[in-house]
Structures are given as structure tokens and as C-alpha cells.
Image 1: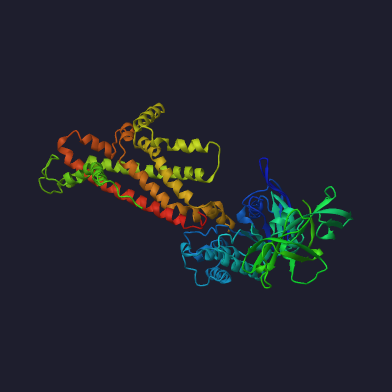
Image 2 (image 1 turned 90 degrees about the vertical axis):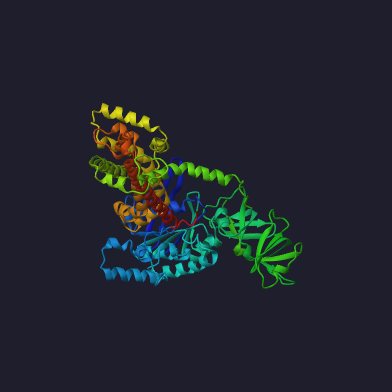
Length: 357
Length: 270
């Protein structure tokens, strides 16, 4: 559907986007995730036609789009500021692009109504732009783009201006909407939870480069390097000694976890016989009383943060340079564990991943 | 915690305002005074000075001249202003800062110097002094005002509106017609009104650059030599005063409306 071949955008010596290679499938909900300045918006704007790559090509449906202006591309965009035309009402905003198609009055009206119904704005067609709330503006922007029936819908941080509750509701709605219209969505976001919750696949970007492309689950559980792991949620990093290595796996040894065999990530280079292991805080489980596990480590609680539904424990393990962070749901009383208490933690060796630096 | 101002401040303010406006307000007062000299005490109410105006052929022709110059100036200054304001607010180019500074310079240059230099240049080019040369001079003077008004019009709405239009399939020209123009229309109107008002009562440049066709201010200047015509001049001055006041008020209302309209756009982050 969308194919990026070696797409580079440089400003003098600075490369905002460096040789991006990417294929986005038809009907996919695809997210570009990264911190600000990572090149994700530049990439989106180049797909839309507002920016031109200095090298490489962008194909949509097999056709090279470089040189085609924005108004002749089969893409539509939902802008971060929504860019609702302030001098037009809701209906006129949604019909803006249809005017050029020279449809019959009834057909145009039908499509506008259909689009408004899709975003649940039925009956608000006559509202002036300045009478709309933030969430409604967002829906108008969405309807205005979808009414054009684009091959690709581009969304530039569409939820960042909404408050938390509304944002979560819109995440669900957007996801449902995308599945029902079947249009390819490309979303730009810096919010990892948003990307994880909505996407079929995610591309994580840093410093103008695409670091990893994968499904939310796989990217979360098997990040290719420390940077990706750190950006997507919390991660405990542990130095480990490499004791064995073959084509696909490495065998490492750490003070607390003993010997563990893990998959070898793509770009992995053994670094003087040592490696970095990662384990997510929620993959560590508190062992109560005389409960036993085949894989456990013992330590001391040094800090505790209460978050309502979960408690974050900071646990010092002898032999580890940094304490482990543990997330426990509060149904067994993790919020009652005092600081300074001895504690045992169970872990699944499969949850340990080797990370490239 | 608002502090009370010193007690002499209101008196000072009242005196200040009186100094600013009392002389101007004397104009309409004496224009309806039934006496050939503008002196107190007043000698009774009359419309006769106004009636005299209408019958004065020279004056009417001067008024038409000013109207023509004013309209031409307003249109030209606004057209140039649109191009300039758009360039300054939308594009990045070499020499942008000095260029926008230079466009504003006529605001602070002594008008008489501008007038003399224009006269020299126009004579050097062999142009005959006429209403056309006056118009050219007025465009130069009005352009900074027009630019200020239009730049606030263009600045007010984000680039993303024009991008959204292009994204929805509209061409560059269509985007200008359907989005840019309606958005800056109040600013354009306001620029037209301001330029017209400035040109209509401008004296110095018109004095140097007009040939045999006087504009209204120049006609008035000529009349001041005759004491008997003073009341009629006062009547004319009153009409111009009221006209300018109305036009500038409309321009300001339009400008504020434009600002409000563009600010209710999706700029939720400001």
C-alpha cells in the first residue's frame, strides 16, 4: 500500500529522516512512534505531500508520489491543530473537499451526512466552528478527511490536545472506525500507550532512523535495543556475562538470575563478553509467605510508590548494580509491604530479553 | 491590590484630553455659527456655510479629485500590501528583515523629505505632475499602514488551514479564494479604509506632487488666504472630520473582528 524506499530528508548537514525503509499494508492501522524530533512528523508530511524527500521514493499503491502535490494524492490528513476552517460551519467544513468533485446536491448531502454519522456528529451540521469543543473539532477534522474516501488517512498526533478520559475514549473509537471503514491509517504519536492500544503495527523512531517495526506485543516484549525498550514503558536493565553463543541464541549469567538462554536480537554484538538483559517490571511477581517458585530472587524493598490500582516497588538485589523496579496489582496487599522488608520475587526466564546497546 | 492613583492624575488626564480634542471640536461649533469670523460669543445657529459648499464648483471638483486619488491609492496600496504581507508572514527568504524594515520606513521619514525626493525623481523621469503622481506618492505613504493591518490578518491564521485545503484536493488558487481570502477579507477591507482615509486628507505630498488639479486639502489651504471663506472651510473641515472618524472606526471594528475570528481557530496550544 505505502512503500518507503530509502527516504531521506536533510536540511544541510542535518538529517531529519535517514534512509527510511518501510512497507505499510492495506487496511493496516500503523503508528509512527518516537520522541519529538525523531522525524515521525516529517515522514508523515512527506507521505501527505507537504514535504519532499531529498532522496528516495514514496510509493502509494505502486505509484511513485514524489513530485505529486498534496492536492492530487490519495491521502487525507487529520492535523494536530485540526485546522477546522473557522469561517465555515461543520457541514461546510466536511463538504469542503467534495465541492471539487462536482457531485449532485443530493449525493453531496448524503456523503456529508454519512460522514457526520460515522463520527457521531449527527445534527451538529449547522454549528459554527467556534462553537465546537475540542473533541468535536477532532471529529469534524476526521469526518472532513474520511468523506474524501482516501486510500490512506494520516493522523498527526490527533489526540494530544484532548484530556485523558476523552483521549482514551477516542482511542477506542478511532480503532473501531478504522476497522469498519477499512482504510489504511497512519498515526503519528509520541505516546507509547496510544500506539500500543491502537496499532496493528508500530515503527519506533529515534534521531531520524526507524529503530524497529513490529506488532505492539512483539515490540513491547522483544525490543531490539535499550532505547526502544526504555521508550516503550518501564524496563529493568541488568549487566550479564556471556557464557555461550550460537547463531540464534546467547547464554548469559547474572548474579541473581543465574544462567539464562535468550534469543539473540538482530543487531546484537557481544560487547567484550558482556550483554544487557532486560525484564519488564510487571513480569516480576512478589512471592508471599512460603510460596515457592522455580525461578526466584531475593532482596529488600527500598522504596514504594502507590498508584491506586498498582504499587511500584523498588527492590535491591545483592549483586545487581541497580535496584529492580516491580509493578504489583494491589489485590494481594502489595501496597502494605513496608520499606525495608525482605522480599522474594518470581520471574519467568522467557521474560528476560537480551538488548543491543 | 490595585493602588489608587494620585489625586492630581484625573485633573491632568482631563486637561490632556481637552488639549487634544477641544480645538478639533471648535471646528464643528464655528461651522454652524452665524458669523463670518470664528470668535466667541456665538452669534446664532445657521446651516448657510454648508449650503455655500454645495454651490462651489472648484470645491466639488477638488473633492472629486481627492476621491479618485483616495480610491486609487487604497486599491494599489492594499494590493501591494497583500503581496508584501503574505511574503513576510508566509515565506522565509534572504533579506526578509531589512526588507520589512524598509517597507515600514515611510512611517518615520519626515514627510516633507519624502515629498521633495519624490518630486525630484518624478521630474527627472519627465513625468507631468498630475493626480497620478499624487497617487504614487500616497501609495508610498499608505503602504506601511496597509502592511501592518494585513500582516496581522495573515499572521492570525495558521499555515495548517491552507495545508488542510490543499490536502482536501484544492489547488493553490482555489485555496487562496476559498480559505485565504475569506480569512483576510476583514483585514483587506480595513486596509482599504485606512489607506483611503490617509490619502484623502494628506497635504504635504499632494502639495508637492499635484499639478493643476488640487486635492481637497490643497483647495482648503488655498482658501485660507481669504478671511471671508473661513466659515465655509470650517464647514468642509467638519464634514471631512466626521467622514474620517466613521471610516477609521469601521476599519478598526473590522480589524478586531478579523483578529477574533482567526483566534477562535484550532490554535488550542497558545
